[in-house]
Length: 92
Image (cartoon, helix red, strand yellow):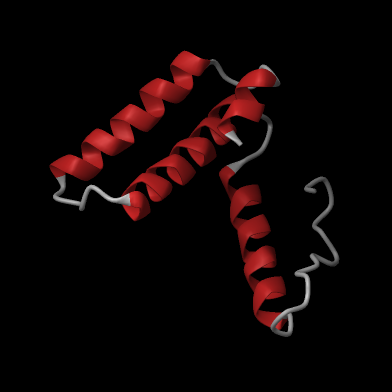
């Protein structure tokens, strides 16, 4: 996702490296374990923060979208593809 955002000109590779590095340093300073879960959460937080900072997508829009996907996931029977219906206007 970050590579696509950099490639699309939404933020720079330096922005990405700085944001991810800061979040990983913060996780380390707070005693978070050095594992893939910590790294994944740092990546997710960095992508979301840079998206809000460098695109017209607001933090509230991200929250609405994540909530919609969570609901769709919980409403989907096991083994079926998750489908997002009724996306909020302007957010895909």
